Length: 138
Image (tube, rainbow, N blue to C red; front, side):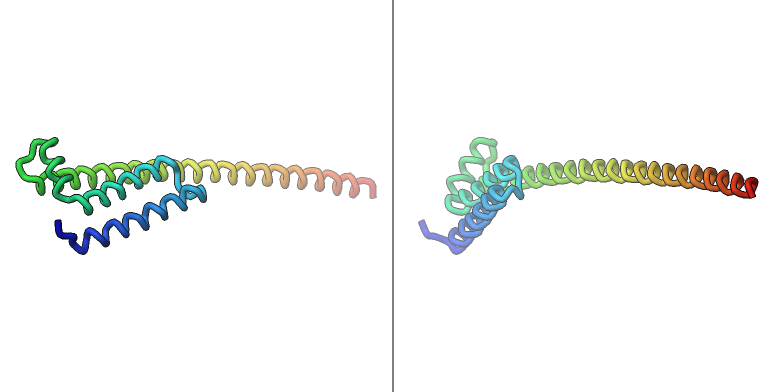
């Protein structure tokens, strides 16, 4: 079996990203779930680059494709859709969280402003009352 240049480059890149993932995980910059998903992804990429014919032929036979290239393309498109769905769901969840945080902050600001206004009115009332009493005494 002849080794192609991509069979050397892709595993090196995959190894780099897997090490990077583990470092981020141990520094608490990445969740365990995310680390696992991306480690599996890079492991599959590494396996595909090292054993492209064996993996693609096995994939084609499992999925019932006559051609192994079609099976790999089909699985790749499926994974792209899966990642797109996952990221769009994450973005929507973050948008809802940001909206709720902004609403809560706006309500807190409004309450502080109302309390400030209320205290200022009370202060004016008592200050005016004291000055009226002082003017009556004089």
